[in-house]
Image 1 (spheres, one colour):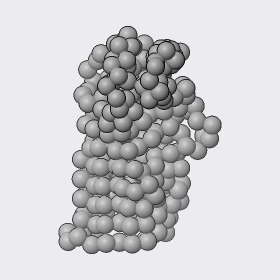
Image 2 (cartoon, helix red, strand yellow):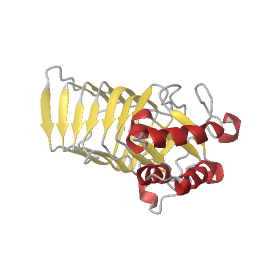
Image 3 (cartoon, one colour):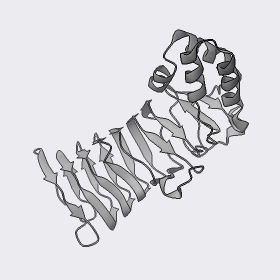
Length: 250
């Protein structure tokens, strides 16, 4: 077991099959910079109050029953994919900001904290290596900030946050088409552009919108007014969603 209680920095380490920490290891108060984990399996490793910057977790790496508590994952060069698999892992009070989850798979995981400035791509992506998958995951303790689920991310088995987001049924792109129709008749170019760009034509049937993303896209009172005239016809009123297919939401 490796326990670090005073804050230390670990720079440019490489963990692979021959150098992976032993099962049950604990890292506490560690700043990891440019850590690369590849071609290995981590089991029951715990990270407490650690910071990860410019780190790569997903080069043919598998994580089983690992825990991240009060950790921060930052920078666009921090990635959980393209071949990172997380099984029965727990993220508690973690910040995941401006990172890449392209190609990562989270199975039976609990993720709590904040997703900030993330783009999560689904099965409609042209490149299968960027598809992020969540299967039987609990995100109920997660706050979303400027986070986009696009390209058909499958969320049927995901327990989404009960508050702080708005959900919309976009099956057959009905919501997007209504917004496009409103954009075409708008006399305001900025309003028209906002309505056209809010929801991409990408197969995302369950649209998840958080306040920060909506404020950045619908940045005029008129665009927000038009959206709120259309949205109630497609908005899903629900409590916490658990293991339920989209038609049951409605």
